[in-house]
Image 1 (cartoon, rainbow, N blue to C red):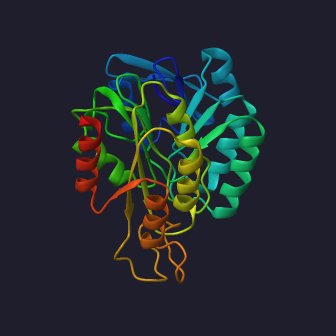
Image 2: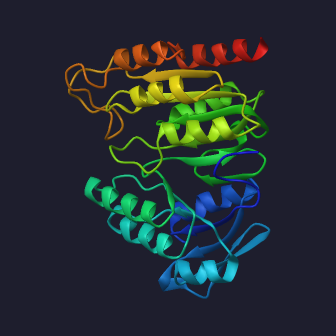
Length: 293
């Protein structure tokens, strides 16, 4: 199985006809994703050829959903239009919106994540690489060839780059799903949401959690693990050498005083019984060792 995205998912791409949308739609199709349409009001009624697949372009998400039965959308639109794109998807009944866009204003993210949640639409992102269920479907920008086979590991990560590294290092074992939730201060899906889904997934045997400095998401995840998760969890926290008060990479990765430090997050996770690697490569070794037992 997998979480949130399967071979049966029917995927739209909002912004498909832009440069990034075109590039990653082609990659999603090559990974086996059932991309059923793009959305661009200015190019409605046209179609785009991607190798051996022709994908129609619709004027609205509602029209695309009514025509194709789409239940997932991947959003490749500029930051100033992202909120409207997500609200349009939620109003059309889309169940999962994967928001790749970087630089979305925080107040916009607060508004559209709340709006979508109220209408039953799960948001992944913004500022995220998306999610992949290897061998089934890929919604976003995760390179499918770094871990092409399904497997036993569930991965949830704030960092796109570290998602790719852990998938590559553990590619021979494989993943049920890998979810890049994004590193902005406001995101639609949390570590806890993915932990709960992986706990319920019978094909996930072990969970890898990747966090980073800033905020308290990892501490809250540690509490959830101690109370609700029966499967083994291995973690890695990025940012042990980050200077205090400076944003590192992601908009949410900022430490103030003792709040949000990598040391505090590691301590909370270890207190919950989670083994925490000192480097991504050591984290991969810990996963291998545990699965070999």
